[in-house]
Length: 332
Ligand code: SF4
Ligand code: MG
Image 1 (tube, helix red, strand yellow):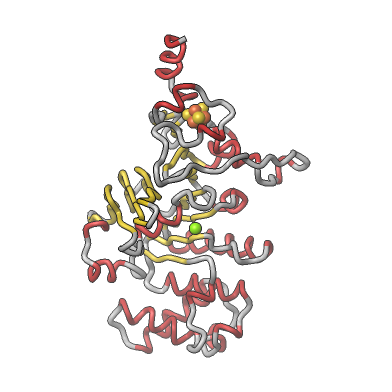
Image 2 (spheres, helix red, strand yellow; image 1 turned 30 degrees about the horizontal axis):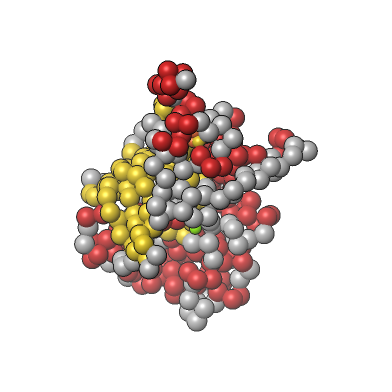
């Protein structure tokens, strides 16, 4: 499989009056061509900060990538100048945010906005730009693109507006599309349509998608692989099947137990008790210790090593680590 993006040991911190918040603490993952990788976790786990780092949209100050690399086409994005980054952002790597309204200018027709987006990155004529814009509107399922081209954002429903935002993100045919909670602001039936649209676009264009969400329902519908984030780290990752049917990290299991599942109708939903640790001074051991009903003495003392369970599936938990179990028994 062709690797499109490679994130290595990413660390991101924010300086605040209270001290330095270590929002992302050593994140590693690859993104392959044509796949959807979902990054899942509770709010504040570092998933949005990770995606903003890829786009180099971390406001500095107060934020800073303090370590690691983000490789895209042989270039380390963390090392590029802002001018170089500007030619990649929106053209090679595009991003869609939660609220479609913030991405659209209410005073300009959607056609104009699309054409502007194209002309920013491509030296083609306005006429050619319009042609591409119409193709994109058609691709994202806006009926009657010729007519709708002249309309302003408020003339569209929420779902249609999100389709237009997706068209905007796709106008330059990016290789990577990052979608941060793209359906959270939409009602459930529209959500499902937008997720179908992602799959459809991916089939037609081969774009690789990073989907950031707190909602495992969304993930079940579209993700090929899932990375579960907790307290600034990826604590488990695997194929969709592995995460849904063979989850190993107690936090992943907790997340799965706290969402309604179509295949487990009637099962009781159990929210995860407690709150994530404060990232001003993250614990030396496993950050889930305080909430984990399997926590052992070693968990408090040291962060678990990564255990590989299959090619895609890995987990950071002492329960999976034979060395820890041996150590544990020898301690006793
Ligand atoms: Fe629970 Fe320990 Fe595993 Fe952390 S390392 S998830 S505390 S068992
Ligand atoms: Mg977020």
